[in-house]
Image 1: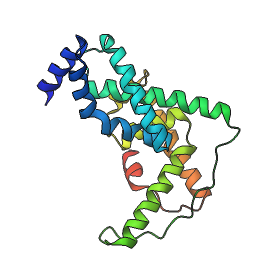
Image 2: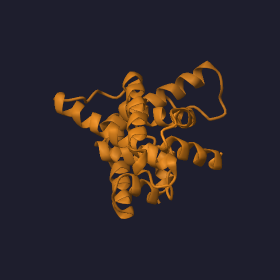
Image 3: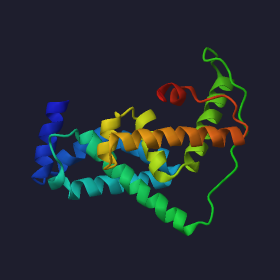
Length: 197
């Protein structure tokens, strides 16, 4: 895949739109998922994904082949989403919404409609919590915990230092915990708590 991807990249840099189309097919899902996690709106996420690919195509000459294309592509996406969030915040006085009540936690082994409903509610609750974070914090959290990028990759994408990323993640986890406690969420979010170390 990597060698094939390099061929597509080289062809796309020479103006081959079909080759760039193959890159879009390969990355459309992670790009859309990142945009959705950051914007919390499927329509806006689709538009952001399209814009991210347009920006990538027009800036292919700036891509450094020594870095992973996926990191570069997700960086363009997240930066575009940050711009949208800032514009949105400038237009709205407050986008704070009350969190839904925390559903009773069920064991992982349970399956069926009830378990799926609880999982869906929990995902909605996490998404609501993410919306409370400042854009830079949200970006770091999504890239670390949903995309499992290293601190170094996130620092490169956000044009900052590894220590700044660790600091943002620490503050974001603390802020998420405080918001959750204030809204009746008493159980910690395991994935984030374990990663705090």
